[in-house]
Amino acid sequence: MPDDAATVPLPTLPAGYRARRLVLADAAAVTAVVAAQDVADTGEVMVEEADVVGDWQRPSFDLATSAVGVETVPDDAASNSGTGSASGSGAGSATGQQPGVLVAVAEVHRDRAEVAVHPAHRDRGLGTALDHWVLALARARGERSVGSPVLEGSAGDRLLADLGWAVRWHSWVLALPEGVDVPERPLPAGYTARAAAPEEHRACWTLNEDAFLEWSDRPRDGYEDWAALTVERPGFEPWQLRVVVDEAGEVVALALVQMMTTEQDGRERTEAYVARLATRADQRGRGIAQALLVDVFAEGRRRGASLCTLSTDSRTGALGLYEKVGMRVTSSWVNRAAALD
Image (cartoon, rainbow, N blue to C red; front, side, top):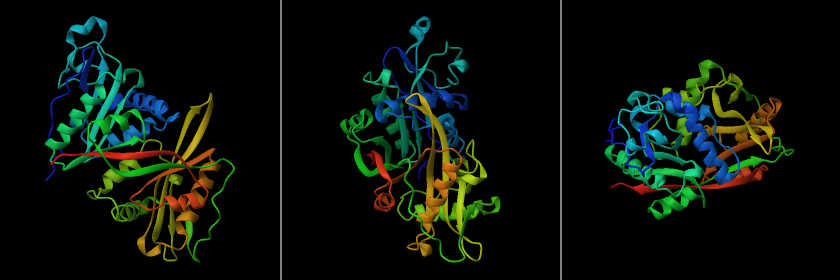
């Protein structure tokens, strides 16, 4: 039985770096590290601070024990380099240390790990040190394996392959090219696509989990965890959770769209990203998901999105569906995992 409360010591690091625990105030700095890695690997930013905060505010995630940051050691504090303090937090404030610059991060939630190293600090042993910490923490918590998504062929992918992490599945980010529309698909008679009402949020959670657990080998997320990533995620607006309801008013499909504005090639670009898309099992094969995509992308474009995207993986079998409606793969990822038995 996994023990989500288990902890392990902070990682031992090369000279000039120290590790510390992360706190909520680090969210912006963590986002900057991940964004820098994104740009180096994919040429674009794929994360925003709301993603980090949403992950961290899940009740099942203990930030104090499940995440670690690596920062540079200021010149006048070089004699303190090494592992850092297990009680360190918030730019070294808890230990009275001079704050350094955050350059790498890692976190573990159940059997999933996320690691990012700023490109300017690669090839210095930080990724390997964080990999060892991830494995130790997941093992201490009783997980049978731990996996991480990495861009196929990236520095992170090569490192994990060298460390013996095997590919569990493939995933893809797809975009609907500007000026291209998903072909219209009418809903069944009596069905309606609209924004979800607050009283329908729990029905959306149930449908979402039922659909995803058909192919995902993980514990069922509680409503509070689901809400932290969806309707309670920073910046959420009610229109972003779209549903299809039948003649009786029951939710039979849902889509969650997240809006992100970044600077690309010197100009701002707003992206509508479909973070969740699910149809109830007994309602599939009727064009409902396609009709909902039409609705979601139209709503996103109406609010300024020039790019509409989503992701899927090889466990779902949905790649062909998205390509059929005009979406194109923009990046390919692998989920690599290490066995802990």
